[in-house]
Image 1 (cartoon, rainbow, N blue to C red):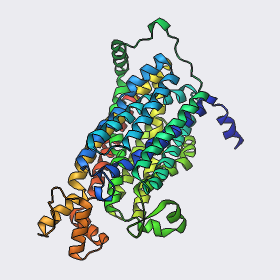
Image 2: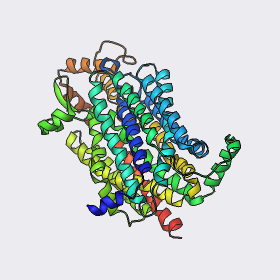
Image 3: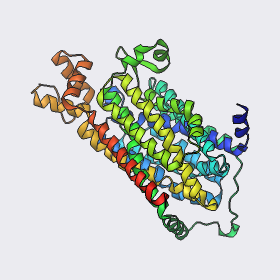
Image 4: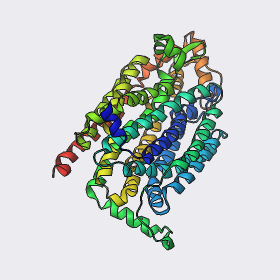
Length: 479
């Protein structure tokens, strides 16, 4: 224990302040993001906005893609003007975006508000990762990024937990919570000490597009770095389905009453009563990876310390794919939990090692810039993953789409236009007409249309990525 305590003391105050800023930012973001897929697509009659899966996919692809593309610009601006100023602007933008998301309901206005959140997050990300990198050494970087990733998941655990309780009152409170939490970071900035940066001529503080393009060309000439970014995009295409697709899939297909009934403590802390039935909501289940990482991340980081980051990432991606594939085979909550826990260990072995690997190969005076580019795979993964989620789910797993097909195939008479009727109201109509419980009708649709096959497709993306990364390791790295 004293050895670990001594290691922790090697990190300066700025390291811990940066981690605390990250905790609150992740609290706010995941408090919104873990619920947003359900909020956007749930029928209006049950409190959602009633957008189609395709509309959801486009919105998430564009907004989250922007969130991870703009750090290229954010890193350059931070290196030029200073980290504190960029962080302050990011927090103000984030708070405004979150608040606006809860006050609007049309597709266009929600989309614009989401873009404000993406803009603020894009300027926050490279600064905070660069702060961690600049306050660690080669001897402490694995543990430092492990601690950072654990902090990410503490915020990622608290946010959805609080948001789940607040949405029982009103969806608006979820977004207000995110806005208020972000404002705490403005106070924390008083304790943030600016890491050392390359000295700049005060008369040349303007950023030119030419300079940014020049930096881009410099980074992209690093062939090994570019290939690595392209391959890792596949991992994020798969992984982001945890947030894009899984919440909707749980809401529509998974019976979590077995988890609710497994323990009175679980039911009291994480459960809720919905239509007279005890369930565990998707955002609470999405907290399982975060809780697993909080408990095991430092241990995993120490165990993986002597393993090359790329090898660790390959194994991690394979484990994530295995976790996703388990979702295919059952609609019971307990099987879902097994897959998610397996997935979490794969995430611990891969995700923090990506940033560690990039920080090792980046020139020390270009760390923020390189870290900005480290988000390119996340951008690609979110853009393609979001579009893929919307289109694949709409064709392979959409419960209400299947219900309409089932109605037409079996010539069931219903009141209302199938093209425009509220999905939840239509489901209740058919359920009543056929004399079935909600669970029985859901099981009929599940058996006939097999919506779980979507997870095998996402797992296949991960398997392909791991093979490409293995080839990368055996060729470029070995040479």
